[in-house]
Amino acid sequence: MTEELEEALRSAGLDPQAVDDLVRAALAEDGEVDVTSEPIFTPRDTSTGDFTARETGIVAGVPVASAVFEVLGVAYEAKVADGERVVPGQVLISVSGHTRAVLRAERTALNLLTHLSGIATATRLWADAMEGTKARVRDTRKTLPGLRALQKYAVHCGGGVNHRMGLHDSALVKDNHIAAAGSVTKAYDAIRAVYPSLHVQVECDTLAQVDEALAAGARSILLDNMTDTEMSEAVRLVAGRAEVEASGGLTLDRARDVAVTGVDYVAVGALTHSARVLDIGLDFS
Image (cartoon, rainbow, N blue to C red; front, side, top):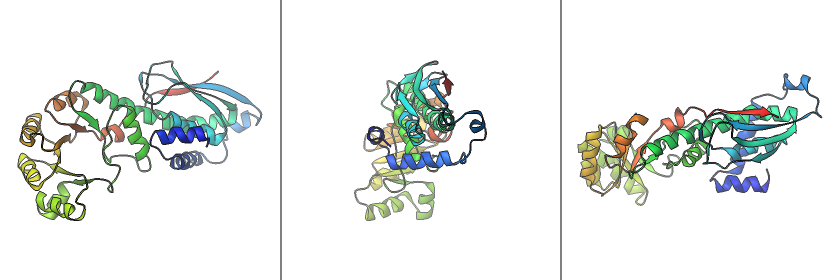
C-alpha cells in the first residue's frame, strides 16, 4: 500500500493494515482462478473504465476501494472525496490496467463502495430530516462482523455521530443488566465503583427509570421505545442534567417528530444493519 493511501486511511480514522487484511480476505473469496476472464483475455490485454454513480447519494469508501486496486496492481484516480453528494452519471473513480486484474477488482471494490455509500446516504437522509433541531443521528453496535470500523466511518461520512466502538470504551446499562442486577441504581453503582470516570449511559423504558437513573448520577440517558409524548416528558424531567438519546425501532418518517421532543441524539441501528446499497457500476471505456 502506498504511503499516500495509508495516510488517506489514517486521516479517515481507519487502520491501513486492517483495511488491507479485509481487502485481501475479500479477494480470496473469489478463489485463485477466474474461469470467465482468463480464457477470454491474455495477461497482456489492458482496459480502462470508470466507477460511476447510477443514482444520487453520498459517497463513502473511496480509499477502501482504492486498496483493492493497489493489491491487484490496478492504476486508479479518485474523482470525488468521501462525504460528497454524487449524481447519476458522475465518475467516482477511474481505473486502468490489465483486463484480468480490473475485472477481478470490480466486484470486491463495488461491494465495499456501494455498501459504505449506502450507509452514508441513509445517514444523510436522517440528518437532513432533523435539520434545524439540536438532535443528531447516531449509530449502534448493530454492525456486520468485521466491518464495524468501516460502517461507522460511513455513518460519519453521511453526517452522523458515532456511538461506542465496542464494549470496551463506554458502558451502556441495558434492560438485561438492570434485570440481572436488580435495579438501575445497583447496575450503575457497580460500574462506577470500578470505572469512576467512564462514560456510562443508562437505558430507560419508563419515566420512573429516568428518575432513578438521574438520582443515581447518570449523565447519559437512553430512552427506549417511548412515545413522542413520553420522550418530551423525559427531556423535561432531565432538564439538562444529562444527554438524552432516543432509541427503539425508529423510522425515517418519525425522525423529525422525535427530534423536536428535545433529545440530543437519535439512535438508528438500521443505518448499518439494513442500509440499501448505493447503485454504482463499472463501465469500460
